Image (cartoon, rainbow, N blue to C red):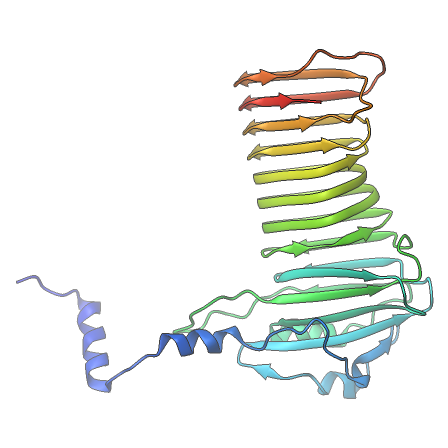
Amino acid sequence: MKRLSKWAAVALIVIGAGGLIVNFSELGAKVAGPEADPTAPIAPEHIQTAGTAPSAQAIEAAPEKDGKWQKVEKRWEFDSGAFKNLSLSTDYNLHIQVKTDASTDYLELRGVVSPEAAERAFRTGGEADGISLDLTGKPKIQFLSFGSNDADVYLTLGLRDATQLENVSFASSSGTGDFGELTAEKLSIQLSSGDLNARRLSAKHTDLTMTSGSIDVKELDGASRIELSSGNLQIGAMNGDSVIRATSGTIDLTQKNSANLDVEVSSGDISIKPAADFAGVYDVRATSGSIDAPDSPGRNGDTIKVRATSGDISIKP
C-alpha cells in the first residue's frame, strides 16, 4: 500500500479532527474587497488646496476598509492653469481621464489600494504646480487567500488647457494602464508587466518602457523612444521621429507623417507602413528571416532603419 507523506497525513488529521469545510467561492468574494467607483462623490473633508497640509480630520476620516483593501477618494485643487506636473507610482490598474471644462485645475483620485498606500495619499499635500503620488504596495497575500490581488485606480485631471502639462510620469510594477488622451511637454510611462493602451499620446518627447506585456497606442504625436523586453507593440498613427528597441515580440507601426524611424528587434516580426509622403531611404537588414521592402525613393533625408536578428521584416506603403 502506498504511504502518505508526512505533510499529507498531518493535513488529513487536521481536517478530519476539525471538520473543516471551506467555501472557496465565498473566500474569493471576500478577497476582492470594495470596488472602486470612478464617479463617486468626494467628501468635503477630502478636498484640499494643493500645496497645503491636509487637516487631521481629513486623515482620520478615511473611507471604508475591507480587510487588506481600502478605498481612497481625494481631490486636490489648483489655481486655474497652475497644474503643470504629475508623477505617480503604483502597483494597480491605472485609468486616466482628462477634462478641460473645469473653472479650476484639479486632480481627483479614486481607487482601491492597500491601507498603507491610502494613508500616503491622504497625507499628500502636493505643490502649488503639481502632485507626486506614491500608491505602491499591494496588500500581503494571507493564508487561505484566494482570488485576484488586482485593483483599480482612477485619476481625473481637470485642466483649463489640455496642453498645459509640462512633466508627466507614470510607473507601475504590474497591471494595465489605460491613458485615454494625454498631452504633456515631456511624458514618461514605465510598466513592468501588463498592458498599455491609449487613444492618443502627445508630447515633445515620449518615453515608453515595458518589461513584459503589450503596448497599443492609436496615435502617437512627437518624438519618442520605446523599449520593450517581451511583448507586442502596435501604433496606429505615428507623427515624429522614433527609436524602438525590443528583445522579443511583434512590432506593427503605421506612420502618419514622414519622419525618421529606427527599429531594432532581437527576435520577432516587424511590420511598417510608411507615411504617404515618405520620400527617404529604407535601410533594412535581417540576420535570419525574410525581408519584403520596396526600393527607396531617396528624395530626402528621412530614414526608416530596421534591424532584426531573427524575424521577418515587412515594409508596405
